[in-house]
Length: 130
Image: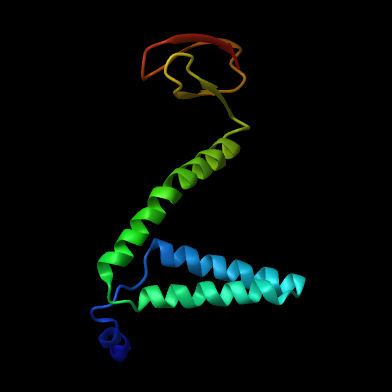
């Protein structure tokens, strides 16, 4: 294991973009094995080679810039995905409304009848049926 540490001195290593590339190559390999098409296999290998090239690169500033561009693209998508999952989990016990003035999402318990909801952000009051 010590030889690997010595090998990686001065090299970039793993980051979020490398992890995403690795996961994408695994997905392509699984799809390739299910469909039996070699095209997905080729794409998976190309992505995997690019992932390893990034990991062993000594141009750290360039790799960091690539990762920052990826994160600027990925973080809004990831946030929407997390919000969707949280809403799906709370769908049985909560209702979600949007404030008419500021657009803030409001979560209220289900089954309370007609209630008045006050937005914590802008103090706008809504009357909704839960």
